[in-house]
Length: 94
Image (cartoon, rainbow, N blue to C red):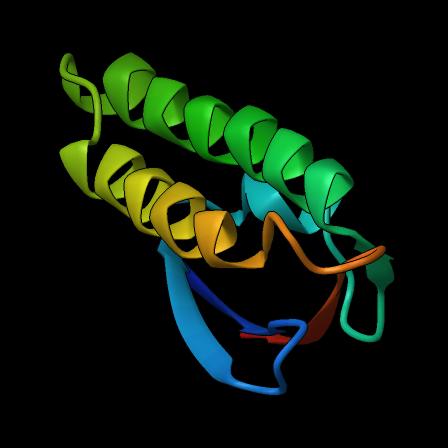
């Protein structure tokens, strides 16, 4: 199953490289997309859950790496709760 890495820019300008075990994230994110933080979290939940389910369909078990990545995203997002209208940019998807 082809893995995909996608890079995001957080409201403070920092960047993270994120992992998905499936190309399904390309249905939810495109390079250059900018969106409110809460929309990004919602899309990340849907995309990474779908990616984990694709692994389950192929190999018979869920992908813990996808769920770990979602946990990292949610943990970092908490830092921006008090930022007025925080935005996330999808820098790239490989």
